[in-house]
Length: 316
Image: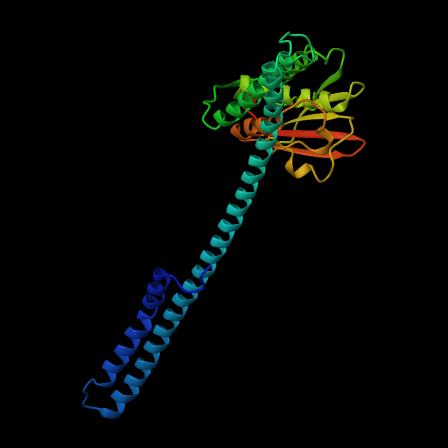
């Protein structure tokens, strides 16, 4: 970054000198003014000249101080923009690396399966056969691309806002999770604040919020283990409505916590567990589209809590 002042700043510095230059010119003009009483005129002229010079110098000093503060602010903004750009570049590079990893594995398996078929391997649909393996990897790629498309579309997706009863919506999300294959019989409890008052309803998009809640609850069941329990808690803090999804699973490593909402990120605890790493990124975007925030806290060996804070709708 260049330390030389910009043309705009140089012009501002020159303009800041105008009060001093005008005061100096006025002082010289007063000194040259003809007068009958030379002694009295000299004294008055000296006083006026000194006062004018002081006023001009003060105004120019204030203007130069403003220019200095402006230059400092510009440099600080430029450094902040450069730091943000560097951060965005790092996030983009990590995303490309993860996308390459997610695409490379199924494509490699597809290549092996197609090669086996080309060499005369039986193309039956039984498990472990080349055709079945190829179909499985194609389905995996389709899920990945569908997830990426949904994530990209969320930025421009028009929200259909309506009054949402959180308890009812979360009950539907829990029922959907528990009816999914492999989730039958999971212990998922819903707790709603009842006193001194119940949480107000939300003004939100019913379908998008259902997708977000489903993803969080399903994640809690998936990573909490088959014997784990999940609690869904609804409350309010005066400024908005809080939804917490807590599990007593193995937790998230501290090193993974800053990255869990990044696209395609999968921490060490997610190795061997089915998923694309897009679910939490999608949830975060849905929450932000509603003007809310999403946070996570976790203790390894004890569990994880996701906290969703959303603006409250009209009071009941």
